[in-house]
Image (cartoon, rainbow, N blue to C red; front, side):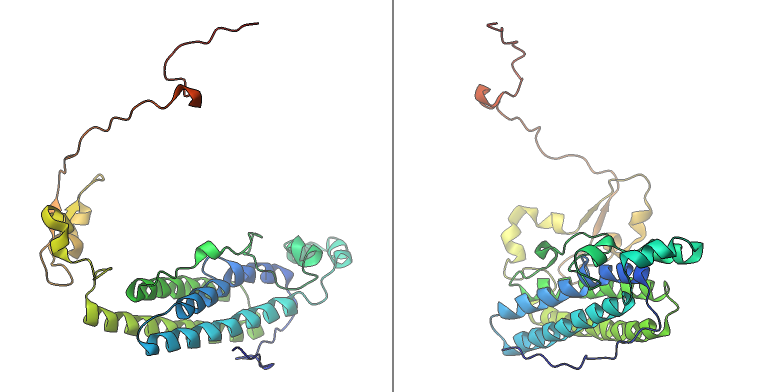
Length: 281
């Protein structure tokens, strides 16, 4: 059961309307790494979680918090759009300074949502459920969550420097701080799961099952110009689980066969026979 509380998690109050900024903030609302994505990602991971109750409880806690963050951003966008209208745009066009601001307004904020937030990114692309990861493998999902929070926090910090509105910045600071905690949270869960099951996903497929291919788990293939990649630990160090040492292959050679595929049926009109069909006309 979900219950809505009218008060927001943190205060949302802008200094002045700014339609251009409202458009930019749409990215961290409905973009690939926006709040809608992490909200749905954590909730679906939680809904589908089986096994230890603490992981499900944690996912539902954070997923529910993200619902509140979506509402916060919707409120922020709405406040930034206060007073925006087609007439205002026309009037603003007479003043070059105002035109630069109003000219950047997302037309859909006027036409579609009536000066409200939209479930889209900053260029109007609708939010896509394909953005979320909910695989049923806890370690794989927690790593995806860390990635999502890293990208989300990066985008909000970039937006922070794109405005001087102290009210907006105050809201951003709260979100940036929460995103930092969320990264700590996922790192803690990842460390716990790695200690329990190992660092490779899925841990249920043992190294031994790779049989003759095991050696390929430690080789770095140099497949671009230069050899700078040889300087990394991925090329000269040991595997994180201690199962072997990495090997740098400076001049790798192909070890497979040349693929050969049979021609498809002529009814597929592949033009591979080089036979020109005579016209009956």
